[in-house]
Structure formats: C-alpha cells, structure tokens
Image 1 (cartoon, rainbow, N blue to C red):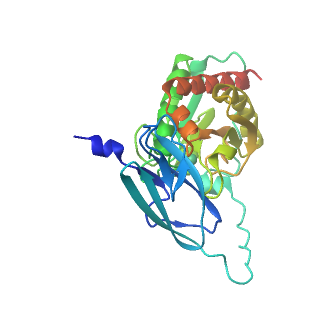
Image 2 (image 1 turned 90 degrees about the horizontal axis):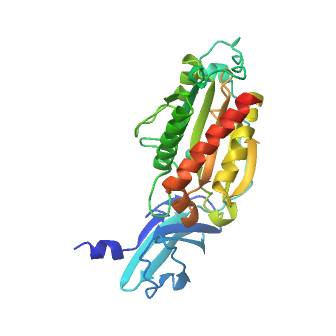
Length: 306
Ligand SMILES: [Zn+2]
C-alpha cells in the first residue's frame, strides 16, 4: 500500500519555487530508493544514492528560473527554483553595523563581571550547567537530505548531553526541552539570572548554497570572549575525537548572540554538517550522540580542572 510512497523521489533542497542568492552552482539534496538497479539521475546525469537513501549533488545554475528533472526507474520529479541575478552596477557595501553591547542585549548591569570559576574539587552538584538546543519551533535551522531538521538533531544531542552531565553529578538546566523557540537573547539572559556556571549551545552545521558540504564538513566550537574561548578549547578537543574522521577546525572566535554573555562562560558546539548524507547519518546515530555527549562532559571536567 505504501510502496509508491517509498519509491518516490524526495528533494529537500532547493524547495519548489525557492529563491536562491546569486551563485554559479548549488547543492541539491534529497532521498531516493536505494535499489541499485534503479539509478537516480538529475537532468540525465547519474547521482550516487547513499546507503540511507540520501543523495547530494552539485549542479550548475544560471540567473533566473532553473529546472531540474529527477528520474529513477519510472519515477520523475521536476523542481523549479530561482537564482538571483548578479547586481547591476557598482555594489555599495553595507554600512558597518554598530558593535554589539552584550550588557544592553541581555539587559544586565554594565558592572557585571564573570563569577569566579568554581575552584578545583567543587562537587559537581554545586556546578550549574545550562544546555541550549539551538533553534526550535518555527526556526528549523538547517535541513538534511532526508528532510530532518537541525532543531531536532540539536534537541536529541542536547538531551543526551543533559543525561551525561547528570550522570557525572552536575546540576543541569535546559533552555528548551521541547519544540519551542526561546528568543535568542532570552537564552543567555536566563543563564545570567539563574547563575549558571557554564552555558553550552548545541548546533549542527550546513553550507551555503554554492559550497559542497563534502568539502566543508568539519566540527568546531565557537566562543565570543576569552572566558568562553578557554571552555570552547577544552570542549572541542574531546568533540573532535568523538566525531573523527570529521575534520577538526578547533575552537574559534565568532560573535554569536548566545556566546557574548559577559557573566557566564559560554560556547557553541557545531557537531557536524547535516546537509550531506554521511553527516546526516552520523548525526542521527544514537551511539555517536552518546560519544559526543561524553566528550563534552570530559571537556567541561578538563576546563574546571585547568
Ligand atoms: Zn544552528
């Protein structure tokens, strides 16, 4: 009864009628039957279907409407999308945006300083870790080939981390436990108000339209200030081992709303890229999820012992 459904071709990106920024090529992701005798083709060019059914292809595109025809066996799917034209005339650079003021953004007193790091030997039960699952609700984040949403990868990984931290004895709170969307600044503001000692945000990555996710795939942990960076370095050292052979891009500094907290050491883990079949499969694997959760706990313990 459901045969037709499983034999269908699913295209996750680009969506029908989607408008893409100016680019000469785009990635195309989706899922199809893994039946080896039924080859998947895009505009007549054969595409590898991964063992999970996911596929990834890079296709050349032109400004204006583009049409892709997907065929596999007797199934056909046509997808139209629009690529923005190059700007005509000189491009005026956008005026620089004023620097963020994390005190004003979070609505906390400007004389706020980082609380003293818990001294080595502090029982974990006296250490409060806030775990943030990125995105949520109407904000799905990135999409995977089989149509899974980053917000869901994030909550599964965050819950595994919550459990691992509790097993290690830490006091843990979550910025969300369901498919809700706490406003971006409410997350670090809550960490400040509830006197968290550590804030860790969980995300999964994806590339821009013109970049092949296979080339870009890496793990990294971001921080936005010195205090956060020492935490990010400790965490990323272990995360990199847990997700190997995914390339390790180390800890990096980036101005991120949830990491600019001037009161709570904060970092944001980008575990893997989900817009390629291998990254989607690994990120959906409960065993890998447990490894990453344990790795983050080890990073937290290292940082506390530094
Ligand atoms: Zn994200």
